[in-house]
Amino acid sequence: MNHSTFDRSRIALPLEEMRSFGYRVVDLLADHFANMEREPVGAKAESAKIISLFSGEPSERGRDPHELLAQLEREVFPNNLHVDHPRFFAFVPGPNNFVSTMADALAAGFNVFNGTWLGGSAAAALELGVVRWFCQICGLPAAAGGLFVSGGSVANMTALVAARHALLQDRVEGATVYFSDQTHSSVERALRVIGFAPGQVRKLASDQNFRLPLDALREAIAEDRAKGLRPFCVIANAGTTNTGAVDPLPELAEIAAAEKLWLHIDGAFGAAAVLAERGRTALRGLERADSISLDPHKWLFQSFECGCVLVRDAALLKSAFQIKPDYLRDVHRDIAEVNPCDYGIQLTRSFRALKVWLSTETFGVAAFRQAITRGFELAEFAERELRARAGWEILSPAQMATVCFRFGSDDALQTQLVDVMLRDGYALLTSTTLKGATALRLCTINPRTTEEDIVETVNRLDRFARQRL
Ligand SMILES: Cc1ncc(COP(=O)(O)O)c(C=O)c1O
Image (cartoon, rainbow, N blue to C red; front, side):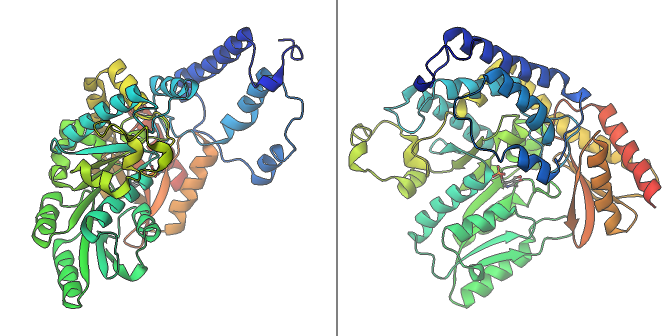
């Protein structure tokens, strides 16, 4: 392009330049999706070097967008971890799909406003349809509803705001909340944000299977009642981040019902697995929740940011969040219309449901079921590979696509193995602490991971561990 011949102040590219720029972007993405397994799993850049690349003043007169793409290819994309890579087993991977990526481009390109029915009626209707489907696979009743949010952290907070409003009329003094020490930190943070002091939070020691122990819960509730406090909410895990452990959901639902507590289930990691037979069995009791967090950007293969909060009685979510300001009077005139902004903290919101809809319709629900099942199987395969080699101890057997293990008993060695694998670049895993011991962890939710990927990852771990001993 002759880069000086158009009026930049319109913040617009000429038609042909839009096309060639867009095609180049699509080519980059298609090549990434098609070839990523032949590339390293990503890199962590040296901080001084990478910060200096972006510390200059912004361009005054503009630059050639193709040159900018080349810069991104050179400096940005290789210097991140590729959470979508089939050998990225760290934290919770982000194995998004190409169709979902294109849906994001469409949602951003049309700049769909998904905050109100007036602003985006088709978007709201599509979101309602996807949310209804999620409620249905989780076994929630017809009155259930929910909202797409940025991720599990905001889903947890949104659910807890609904709980606080419904059960406490927003007065938190003396109210107490219960969950296991395996619960994601976003729950604790959400409670902090919505006004709970640390003294109102009961983080109970998990049992040997990393689950919330029922007796300890009953005792803690009884103790708090005896002190005149107001037990109000139990938060259960449908797949913990550490080990994939699922708390005893049916029993917790019984306790919550008997004690008149709100039951929130954090299924940010695991709830999507309910779509598949294996997940449905593991997550029995999910249908008893008052609210559920479910992150499509994890085990439902969507691009970030795609979380979802589901509430058994959608009206409770609405009464917790709805405010009707003057300037939205046209939005609120027809009370039959559903305004997503009435169900959460965002007014302006992107069209997150589109990527779930477009990719599910493209590949079919059966493909998603198989892809989820594959996650379970790959973790079990990894466990068998580890058990077949001397010196490896399984600290938490494969469950919900997660297995935790270590080589020998030296905590420092496990951490070194994370670093060696990162430098090696073939595969990536991270460590955690389980009952005081440092553990390595593989999370195998990427459906594009092969058995060979797992074998070679375990081979490398084994070789590096023995070299370091
Ligand atoms: C169980 C669980 N809850 C909540 C979260 C937070 O989700 P997000 O990072 O999407 O905010 C995570 C993230 O890994 C998770 O595993």
